[in-house]
Image (cartoon, rainbow, N blue to C red; front, side):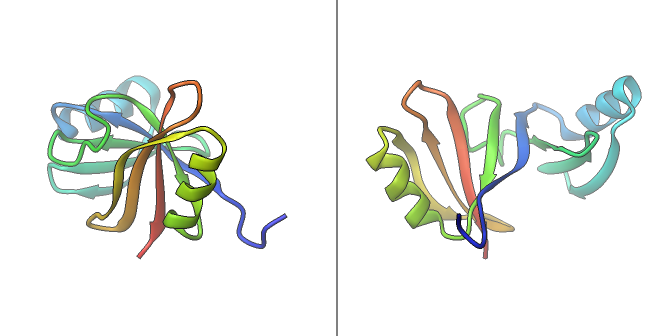
Length: 117
């Protein structure tokens, strides 16, 4: 097993209005706000899992909710994903806080693969 195993870092939900979504998930489910980056992104504490709310500007999945998997090295993770039958939808790019790529597993499920910069 790797010293730095991959882990689910968050579950990404694209939303049209981050502020309204923070209010909705806070009021309806009691999720506390962990981090807000203006009108483009927010992270909520969903009881041990982070719910990431992404504005259209920050939506890398074209409106598809996705697990975001934190890895030690994005290119290496994508190589393993491709060798195991997955596909890359969006090549690695530098985001505001991380290096990220969008991929699909062999069954068509979208995942965001990311690492710290």
